[in-house]
Image 1: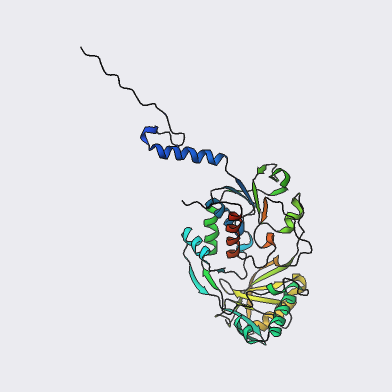
Image 2: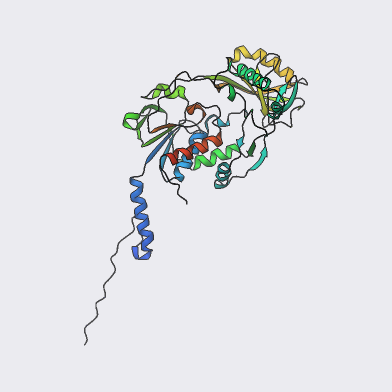
Length: 369
């Protein structure tokens, strides 16, 4: 009888990810999975303080660059973005791409802005082009004085949207609540309140006593909060108190406008109105106790056929006041968004662009998946 041939069995190695035997899978896929898992252990850790629209956008983009990221937020994601007042998103290639990636329906339109001058609404900013530079600047400065209750400084040119533009801006029409919801679903949110930022030890402490370590920290919360919880210096920063009324007019005189600036009203209270779900959002800066009677007079002027106030948000944060001293941000701590960067023009599209600029400045390369 001949000698039996001995057959060697394959080694029964198992994949750490799924438990399948290696020979059941493509060896290349297995090695790539091991490499991804190893890289993840040494991947740069990014922590974002604040789960408003800036923080959620940052989380989404940072993940697209292949980094681990946590968002620390104590309240409902979205922050003040959904509170009310004038709200639209400028149309850019990046914003269009974001909405397509999130599978959110959207449409585009040109923002039809207006400004009330001598009791009549004129197209804004188009009407400024037919004025002298001195007259156009006077209107902007008067609006600044009305909203900030102070004389114009370096923010004087930012008191109104795009005053030098020759055509109105393009914008995206969408469901803002759905946008926030989709971004929040894709974020790793830690529900906590930050008690201290220890930049020298690269960690954030929460009120629960937990330490969250980072390699890069992105701060989206306002300077007046960072001022009290950081081991580095940032000025406290001051913003005007903003009051927003939901008003239903008996007759709609402003249906064609997306917003209307009101630099001149009888009692100098209302500075802007914009359409809301059922009527108009009316914006008034300052202490409400001092502005309530003046607001009633201005509303009677704006809606002479009568109106009903159906709700109010009193004492939110509005227009920024100029900083006397600049913040001293550590090298691996970056501010993002309107209240952290202290930039009145840090709109949603600008913030999205800033995140990509930061990532490229850090040498990150975008990954596709």
